[in-house]
Image (cartoon, rainbow, N blue to C red; front, side, top):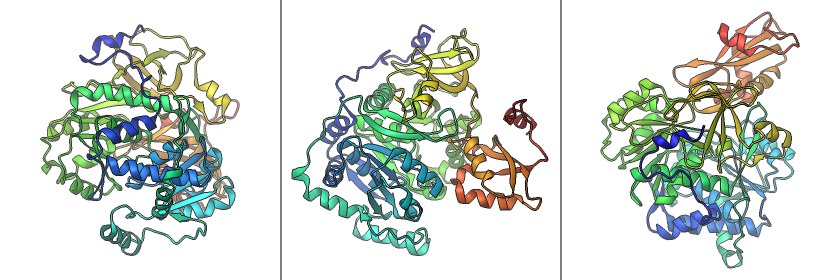
Length: 556
């Protein structure tokens, strides 16, 4: 398409980036910690952590990993919400030369077991609220040698930490009983690492070394690890930094991080990109508690916010949100799922800041397109391809289609993943021969170079910005002995964008909707659990027996 989008680039944004001067994410972190040592890097439940403290604590965690024999390339799983422990463990893992494997804390034992076994994780840092889940799968995850368990309040200081832990454990009863005799506490690990500091040996890292195994369904329902290298992530951080640089101020921004850091959107956009300008991440551990979220927001002069449509909508529907002082707001960015025009308009009216869409996927680290930050209103586009990024719209044969014609969105750029972990066939299927990644999303490019998303080619369901794959839901439903056959689709939902609906052919005539949903809650994360159940005598199929999900979607 001859990069027609460059004509619409805001002044000052380069057509291409250069990351030769950034050998790794560790170099990026260490530079930020040196440059902004006394600036606040993170705030959690009122507790501040400076860049200097982040530097010291992450180095201690790296030292602990190294003291336990973990070497360059070993995988370390992180399973926790947005707490101060997360960035410490994240950067410590990278500084030890290890690979981060992000795990959703809401995983069921079945989901967690798959990810730990597939990644071959040697260690895990897990918040105690979910240790009971890990306990159930430990006997079957033989590669996992080290377990670090942390309570919610562990890094909040003695008094506040004890109070938070008391409320979480005793009042709200959010910590089911667990027993893992070999587990060590997070503070104990840091103390050991601190004592071993003189023995710590910095690990040489190159741009092509792996930084993350970020799990996704890709183009099928089998959860697989997207191999994101240091170059992939530093490229995306640099691309995003160049895009936002005209709108932000060095060392002065406070960005609200409500989306979970284990999700690639918040990981790259909030946690990593804003390192470049010494910003403060305001961590929200439970964004579902909207009143609590709004109260926390009210304490700080927030200037940047990233979120998904459902989160924006929930905030707008809270009467106290409109009472906040938005005079410091500079940037609001929406991704993960389509931003609805009415939500964007209400956001602009209340906050005075445009809600701009961006687009990407796990396999692109994630940003691929972003709307210009100087736009006044909502344009419905998912943005312009960012620096050094090419977009090609192609038909089923892989041939590029003309401008304005709909086809599959394909992406090529330095942020595109190396491939899927230990899945060469699926990696090959994900790319065209010329290196363009097949996204499975349908869209078009207009004459100004803006990209518009039309539909998804794949059957993936998008619930509040999280991917739900029909194959996984169907497999879980089919585990119920009363189910004869099942198909899952996504249907429109005013709260979450889409919701899961299943069509079931009963083997047991007495099977009820309630019993099925209760079963699903035991084997699926909450957002994957079907919201709608329809019983049928049979399901539509092709002549070779494949269920026609499209026919079910049209009928729904």
